[in-house]
Image (cartoon, rainbow, N blue to C red; front, side, top):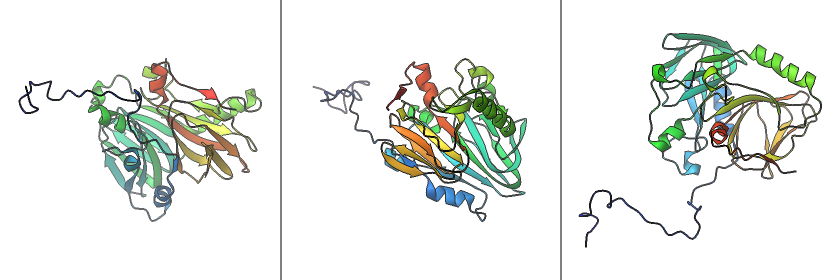
Length: 300
């Protein structure tokens, strides 16, 4: 009879489970959440040049920083005349410019930006942000996905699925205007502009496992309650008088506050403000599209 110390290699680490429920893994749920403290720090005019992670890893029971099990969001604050560099182990990096203007450099790439712009870069490279005026960017990556798999991101020059791309905020607003001109009252989950790049054009996604869009809702509008398999990270751009209901819990939006909508949560947005709702939404939905299992359904 072998013991754990003398068992052949392979048998030593083999574990057999006979569960009562085949799908029960004892995992923590993804909680609805609004990152209030992080937003206050990032928007404080005295905030130093820094990176502020929106980290729920403790609540999620994870050993690495994570906003959801597959996504990590951060505020990137760069004071005027200063710069900040980072290297994230991610397939790609998505940025929304909340405030300020400046330029981001990665390798030979130099990408100017201003408030309202969006851009995406391959991950695993030295990224440097330089601010001409006090700037706040919000960064989204798939680092937790890679950490879970024990995988490293491809080197930027070997990355065939993430192309550097820049989406002008002015052009986004023009596209949104066209959407609202050609359509009537809200009948879909949102009137939006979805972002993609050449390598992922067929899937209409911005990263292999993540989607990104700017979403809107008219004044006095109520989004129809719905659910989907993807978790969503919603960054409030126009937030006055806006709130969301997530599984019956009300979350009131705050300027450039980030809200987590858990997977399969019944949720809806409601506009009681003086202007059109506007948000930048990142989801891990691209993976579900690839699996042909988005899980979208109306709930009312």
